[in-house]
Length: 132
Image (cartoon, rainbow, N blue to C red; front, side, top):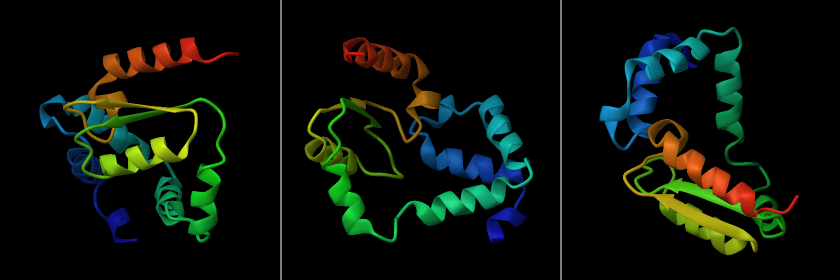
């Protein structure tokens, strides 16, 4: 794969620039951490496998299966996600009976990196409300 020929730091920078809404929050230490993982032997293979499996061969069955989810489900989405549109979150929220959609304004595809405090607050609040 051609992306494996590009330097890890370049790939991490490019990808995270697409994922972050507020690029001023994209610090060097975050880029360095992602680049470090790209140096692990086999990481390129794993990434290519994940990408290949993003759209499963049995899409119709997969989508139908989403509607059978009966567990309480949190859907946490950055309102400014440029990689996966907010309409996908809305669709999941509609299709999963016990789902709760929380959107984070001024946040992109990786809320755990871009808005970590708010992400943690939402997760903790959701988990407190889920019966054991």
